[in-house]
Image (cartoon, rainbow, N blue to C red; front, side):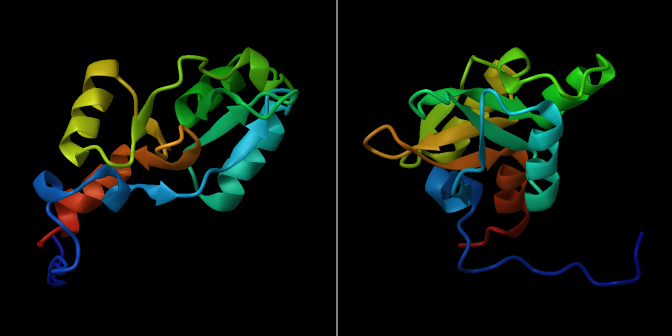
Length: 144
């Protein structure tokens, strides 16, 4: 236990039961093409301090999949850090609308066993990412 007082939450941040996905998500997407090497994707993740990147189809820029930190570790242990993301990325892309309630997103993450959801705008375009850490932040600091 620390001798430092625990900081209070914020009256500007909603409690999880009142929050939407858009309230908690990280806006913007970090992405790599499907032909990008695992090493390059790791550099992107490390440089931007993110635990997942969206993988795009180099032919048309459409969503191809997602590379999470867990998948990166599994591939690294497989011994080939120059493998293309097309061989490593999870093609089962889990998405949600920013308009959805945050607790629905948390339920979806639990039910599917994933730690990240790609957030789509009303036109179906990726606009951000929601992680379990984002949900934890709302639980920790939400007071409104």
